[in-house]
Every structure is written in structure tokens, then in C-alpha cells.
Image (cartoon, rainbow, N blue to C red):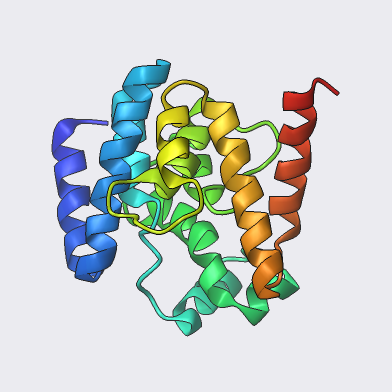
Length: 194
């Protein structure tokens, strides 16, 4: 991806996102680039995926549902009840359709940045973790420790985030996307050696 494309996408995000979301987006892009440098991933891919990961976050729930229906994007019952969760699916679609990003690793990183998935690529892990630890985030359990851990052991940081997310959702009585649980189980098995 050429540098000018990244600049265009940054400007597009500034226009389509509210100030707080745009600051978060820049934080994720910055953090993803730093993690990419640390763990040997493509710096440009990490920055681009970070810039685009929430490209559908500031649109209405109705618009997200409309895009899914119009383009045959599957919607599960939990997403139908809480269409905000569709921003990752719609965002991966928009990355290709509106921003002409066709690199499957970047598209998958956008698609899986909220729930994760078993067997994530290095870039997918980077975006998932960067979304949680970026500098503008202030309140999350164990945030300081996870920020340090992310630069030492990305998979352990990923697992800690999944664990915190499941505990938070369970504690608030919110619905848990089955993919989040599958991802947690997969990495729990990997890290325990089973």
C-alpha cells in the first residue's frame, strides 16, 4: 500500500468518524505499527488495518444492517439484537469496496478485531491487541500489565484481553458472541499446551 493511500485513508477517517473515534483510530494505527516493528509484521499493513478497523463504527445501526442485508453478509442473532457488533463485518466489507484494500490479511484483521478467531495471523493478533491497549484507552482491567506484555508475548497479551472481555461480559450479563468464547478456548488450549 503506497504512502499516499494511507494519507487518503487517514483523511477519510477524519471526515467519517467523530473526534473521539478518530483519536482512537489514530491510537490503534500507531500502536499496531509499534507492535508490528516489535514482532516482525508489515508496518504498512498494521498501520492500514489500524486506520480502517473502525471505519464502520460511526454509522447508524440501520445502515450497518442494511449493508449486511444488501450484500449478503451473515448476521447472527446476537448481532441482530446489537447491530453495533456488526461494525467489524461491515468495516471489512468497506475496506474492500470503498477503500480498495484487498489484502486478505488486512481485511481479516478488520473482520476479527472484536471477537478474534482461533488461529489468528500475526497481523490479526496485532490489531486485536492494539485496539485494547492504544494510548487513548484509560479504563480496562490490567491495562498497564497487558501493554507491557504485548511487546514481550503477543499471544499471552491476546489471551489476557480475551479473559478480561469474557469476565466483563459475564459480569454485566451481556450476550457473548460465540466466536469470542471459541477464540478464548483455542488460545487457552495453546497456552496450556493441550
